[in-house]
Image 1 (cartoon, rainbow, N blue to C red):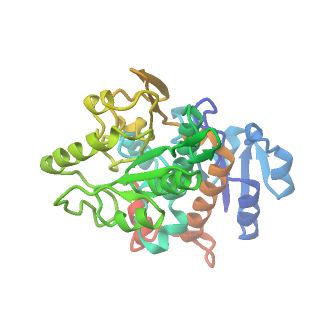
Image 2: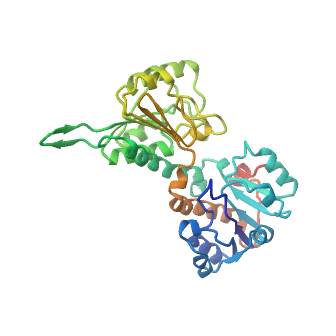
Image 3: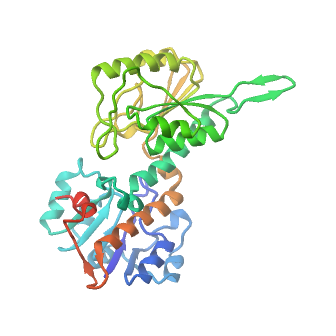
Length: 361
C-alpha cells in the first residue's frame, strides 16, 4: 500500500502532510511512502532526510498516479486532480462546504475524499483532530504577534521610577485557540478577560486564570458536537453592551470566534472600536471567514484612529514546522483507523462514525 504527498502552493501554504518522523512510522507499519522531490526544503528538511527513513522521491506526476492514499493540506488543483486514478483515497483539510463541486467530480471518479475538518468531536477522534491541534498553535502565535505590535510592556513592573501597569487582554471565543491565547497571555503577565456564548467555557477560562465575562441571563449556546451556535438577537444586544464597556479598558483583543461552515459572527462593531484606547490592538484570527471585528481584512493591518486591526488568515504559515508535525500525526492516526492491517487494504467502514462523518459524499 503506497502513501504519497506532493508539494502545496508554497505562496499560500508552508505546511506539509508527511514529516520524516511520521514517514518512519508509516514504513514500520508496512506502507511505502512516495513524496515529490524538494517536498520540504522550504522548511529546511532535505530530500536526503526522507530517503534516510526509507521514502521514495518521485516526480509530482508519479506520486499522484502511483499512490493509493494521497495526503494533502489543501485540495489539489485541477491539473493534479486529473492525475489521480480511480479507487484512490484523498485525505486533507479541504473546506468541503466551499469546494463541494470539485469534490463531487472526484467522487464521480470513485476517489474517496476525506475532509478532516468534518471529524466528529468524540474521544476516539481526539488524536486525529486537526482543528484542535492547529488552533492551539494559532492561539499561541496570535498573542505573541499582537504583543510584538503593542508598544507597551505586558507584565506589571515596579521600578524606582514608578510602576508600569499590566496590559489588559480580551479573548473573544474560548475554544481551543482562545484557551491557548488566554494561557499564553497570562504566562506573559497580562490581565486576561474572555467571553464565549458557551457557558461551559467559564470553568475552563477561570482555571487558566482568566476572568469570564457573563451576559446576564445567558443561555448555553453550544451544539452537541461542542461548537458554538448562532446567538439570538436579544443575547447579541446584551453581549454588545457588556463588550462595549469592557473594551474601553482593554489593550489587546484576540478574536477567535468561529461557527463551522458559516461566516464568522461580527462581535466588535465600529462604535466599540471608536471608544477603545489609542494604541490598542485587535488581532482577528477569524479573518478568513469575515472576521469578528469591523474593518477586518484578511492578511492586512488596518489603522482606525490609532487602533491597529490585524486580520490573519495564514497564521500557521508562521509556525509551519510545528504545525506540520502536529498535522502529520493527526493524519497518521486517521490512516491507521482507515486501514485493515490483516487484509492489507483500506476499509471504508461506514459504521465507524469517524469514517462516516469525514467521507465527503
